[in-house]
Length: 415
Image 1 (cartoon, helix red, strand yellow):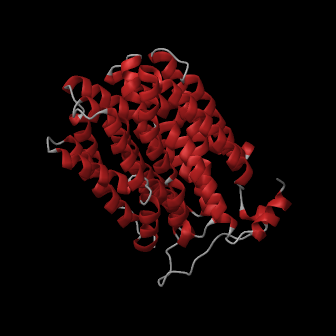
Image 2 (image 1 turned 120 degrees about the horizontal axis):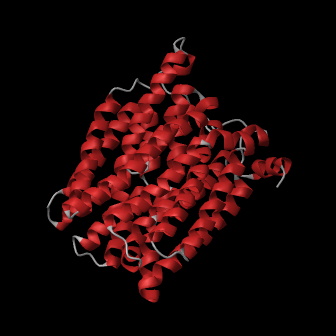
Image 3 (image 1 turned 90 degrees about the vertical axis):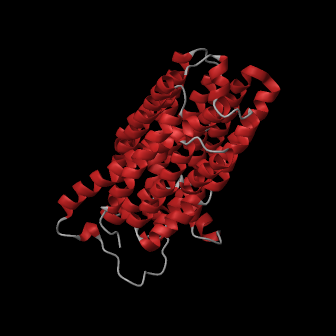
């Protein structure tokens, strides 16, 4: 599709083409993060028995994915500069899909670790530029909402994997996880084809302006217009990066191990644990749009404080020796807010640093996010081996999330 034909198409749509970019972004996140990363939580119990894998090895497989993710994020600016955001996203998705298909044929810990590291590289290559596109296609008053719709792609993937993986395991037995990897990989390749057709790098390619909304009643404080920009930029990137690292460290512990904990420690059948996982995915569909839009209204600082408070409670409930209903409350709190922080962060870098620097700034703070993700699973798996359960891992996640509440309170007001 040429740019001129894309412009003709955008003129015939009953909505701004920016929302088509959002839909394509949702599909990209569904594939690169939802399937490329969060389906692992459902696959680990059966993989762990079939290969077999210890809790520590499970943690290292997840950590390997995040090492690859961080490598891609570190190169993200150069990849986008060379290929453009659209081609970078598509290339990343193809990498994810092919590596997952190969995992379906892997035997033993080391091949799975190596291939899942490649999956992580593809995930990072696709995720950062697709989130950076929001700052180009949407004005400040709409960025949180738009980014919120993009990140819910992971929620759809969690819902699907929670139903798909147990069903395939039921038909193929102990080796059903291999068929799951194959089918998921093919789905990611289909997502790459869709994004190749729909994504565009900038509204000007179609002769358009960014999507706008009525200005807020009080004028926005534009940090990037401040005379103190060099100092402000340095400090705000470090601050946002620290908070994003805490989020990466904590949420991935829960996402990686909650299903395994339910099956091994709470006696849940795999199908029931899959339903539990699917409910998290269903509830998470509201997290990005609701809290992204809320942060548009009340500011990124307050939005982050609310979200980290809910996450702290979710991790603490998963760790405590409480009756089963409290596990469902934990899942509800986690699901309701889980994708809100990426959407708030994607909007925040545009607010504080301006749309032209949003993609590179989001890539910078995502390096910190990736460091948190790398550390979390390996440390949580090690603690689980020592303690004999995942409770200590969830306690650690709750403590770090609680620190993030205080860190969020120290952010400057975004408007």
